[in-house]
Length: 239
Length: 176
Image (cartoon, rainbow over all chains, first blue to last red; front, side):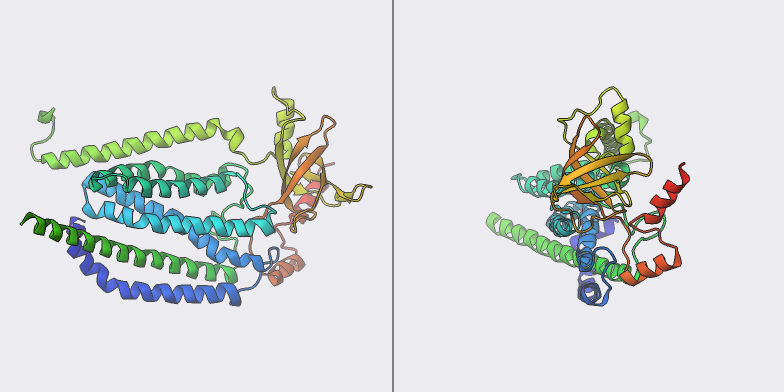
């Protein structure tokens, strides 16, 4: 693993991957949007409102996936002092926060016509809101220190502490009575979503995941470039 | 305590190991703490009570006061939806297929509201057992399918979808 600790080694792998990942993002999102918004049937109960799902569910998954990645990157950085770990966590945070925001907003838009309310304080909705605050807290904390290495270490501890929220989000609908429906796709008896709706959803999810990887590589690249520039400036100042 | 570490292991490796244990044990303690807190607050995290939960609560040491705002959830019982003589109050029964509660609600019902539909309603329980609702929310379930598929399933008699019609009626048929 430490072979990739060298940023140049990382870029040697990431750079050729980037066009492929970008292409996949455009392809999957385009296909998913067309299938979800036009080609898929309406729901027997929700009617056309079901189409919000094709944005809401992938962003909810990504909100949790990005946080999980941040927690793993943070743990790797704290335990093995892997230099890329903190950088991955820091670069992921705004992406994850945006996915969480989209999830909360689209869920609210769906809730008004279906449930009859924009928001309720049930266990699922509240735990996702806490996830959003964890992202915001991380971003605030990682930028709050003059010594960036210390800021990253402290913020990574926060990410690890907050990771306890992930299983709570996932199982909130099983552990307590909630207004939010139980899991439709990742559940014991197999998906409760008809294949004509499941495929657009899965394609959208792949598109969202690829989008995260593309943005992550771009952000890491600019961060590495910024570090390089800083080091050159420091070198010049020292002369 | 350095003499306890095998000489083959470098000092850096032990430090890594120690950090790994610190993170793992911290995580484990955090998980236990979270589980304890969530169990302790179970009553406030639950979004609604089912009619059976409420009956259990009423029989317990702390029955619900009429002034206390609470939420109940369940299915709207088949054939129970009526309008009061004043024309704006909806009367219906919420059931969990074991216990039922009569609900009165003055206001506009959500689109998904119908007999057999899962709902969550907040309001007050009057001493005479009538639940006076101030809000009625429709609960959606996890099944997603096109209307044609739903119709086909109903025709084939294989329906076990959201309205729970067959479940509610067959359960009722079983009880004498």
